[in-house]
Image 1 (cartoon, rainbow, N blue to C red):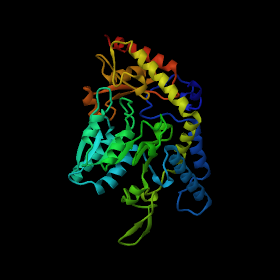
Image 2: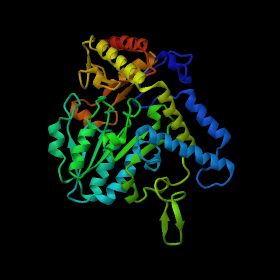
Image 3: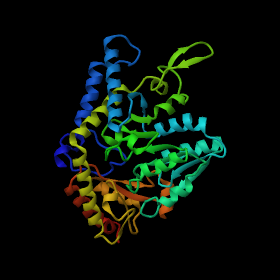
Length: 401
């Protein structure tokens, strides 16, 4: 919606088309104003100081935690752990829950479409504990068949980790169905919400998620702030991921007692201004409204895929139904390397992503080494889509074909 671009300083006075929203989104002035106000008015270390600035910083930080908890449907504020990003959140679970609870003979089930951030931690856990890593395969359309997860999630499965939305294909996985089946087998479920949280309503309890991770910068918040939701019973039983300041009750020379959740998992000086910025981004999303966001992205994706289908040299990956792509359209142009596609489009002031998208197992599964990816957000417009497709149609000519 073009009217919202006025809220984003980076879009002013230029003709750049930004179609790399799956990597990071742009920030509205409301987010920057909220962070500026924190830094100007109460920039102090939260949680420990007894003076006014520190008390206000603590209140702002905990208010942000409450905003996040309400945003994703957590039952309690203390079930929200602030981290740097989705990657750190998943690593926290891997090191704290995984290394403590998994052993030889156990199985970890993940999907072939996972981002490397939801693969590498479980490879590490598998190596260190002897647990077996099991992959749930998807079809070329990105859909995981029911018979795939019902066959591979067994009584030996202790953890199922999956993205709610694929960062390559945009497919929305049937998280609740898989979570219900996994829970019946006694498994814990971790959901990577990096690509879903900015684009659709999320309720972790309705999803059946035991852990849920997302990043602020993918939903118009600042970089360096993310959140992990964990069921309180699991969090209480987990050891700290990092140790040091702010996460203790007491320390003597040879032992320590740790603070309760969530402080137990937030060692060191916290990113209070980042949390404030994340809360402001959530409030901005709520102001725009999920209906308008989802309708705009659906309309733009349909238009983009429909126009790309008119170009015979373009192959689009994933489901043929645009409504299954969640604003993500991954493609290749015959005879042109994706990096060349991205460079040529950059010369036209169009920003896309090219490469393996931190999903090399999925790339191999699809039979390609890399792709180009256009990812949309609600602030993109029909005119931008049309200009993008016109530029894509000229790429082979620019390469001399």
